[in-house]
Image 1 (tube, rainbow, N blue to C red):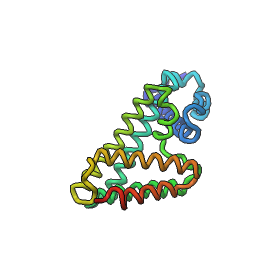
Image 2: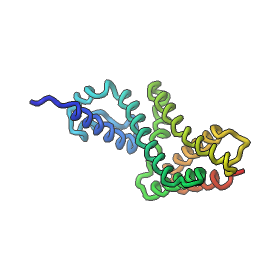
Image 3: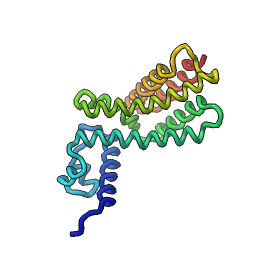
Image 4: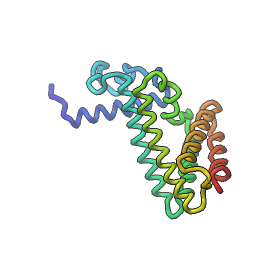
Length: 201
């Protein structure tokens, strides 16, 4: 039997991450088993440990993979929308995401928020990975909000970082309501209040 090349190994590792991400978004961390991940990926369960030492390490890598993938999407969307008004671009990107939620069944929400509620107390490694990832997203928010402050579009009585915290927390809370109510309307309403009333001077 021919030995797998490094390219083959990386391809399988990527497939494991993609499969794991899909399952974690659908079922959560605790309800997703290694056997299920391995079966869907097409490898023996024991081979999973050639790529990840444990399910916990796999969870950390899923968080990093999700973050890297979605940060690229966010930055690409912002670059497409960002002509002269970065604050308007930010609100438009959020609304584009809401539109995707409206057409999705089930309403999965944000993996980072879902995992924060499920495993941050049980796994310190995953908690740290979540903290790092969330800070990366909030950094983008703060940069855009700061630009909005400089152009007079955003209130200046709070720092851009504090406003980014507010936007992130409101966003995540509305996503939880979305999952409970099976409707994206709470998310849309929250964003409209934020961008049309709360954040403006």
